[in-house]
Image 1 (cartoon, rainbow, N blue to C red):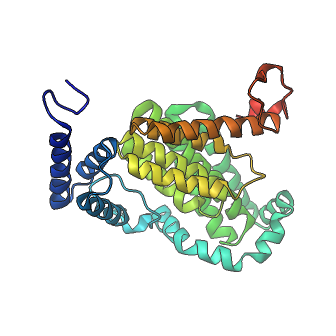
Image 2 (cartoon, rainbow, N blue to C red):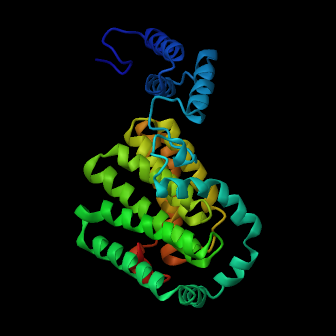
Image 3 (tube, one colour):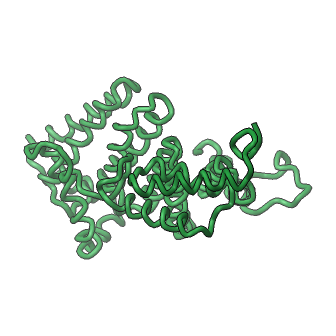
Length: 326
């Protein structure tokens, strides 16, 4: 077997086979077949062919469509899926997509309250009736207990947190600090669980559900958006859809570049990019991103880029607590 993908086959024959696979993918509108053929075209440097460009355009449209035959995730309303109309959580989450714009336009008073977040949370809680306050604290404690029990109870814990969000929306209102803070907390939990599902169970259906909800609830929080995009990239890489993974990682980088003072680790995104490019056999791009990952890790740990001959073990760290927080 030679490097051209078949014993005795010339490079031209292999390239023609790839172009034929692209043509078949275009005709059948098969997302996975197009992804596979485009990845192979990249490996063979078949970049400028009209058929390749047509396949790219079609794949992009399919990703933007609701009808692609893959786990394509979008910022769409869960209420538009097959969920039962009487499902309170589905209705509440469905509102969040349209409500995000309202947050951006009408939350000046909320931003003022967030300057003293803990006091605002306490004031809003104090405004509840004793009965509702007890209900909310019971919901939150139940979710916390389930999270503490470990992986077997994680899905039940998320369901409890979802009901906690529904309760807050109903009793505090959309523009409350309680809702704003809890949305972020739940979005982070969706991301955490999606990683566990990808790494330990390969439950792609539930993972897709959690990542979709993380996109909807987390849209207001740039740090959550960056983490969600990274997790989406890992999700699609595991599904063999490397081109989609690269798109999400680039979006993550775009967000992270606006978060100069954030604890978000941009080095993680560069490491993920290195992995995807390596799997695509694009080693020049992979090498660039591993160098960028090292550079950002040094900035994070030492506050500067180390010299070529400096030993990292002999350089004082910027903050000894950095490693503990990673």
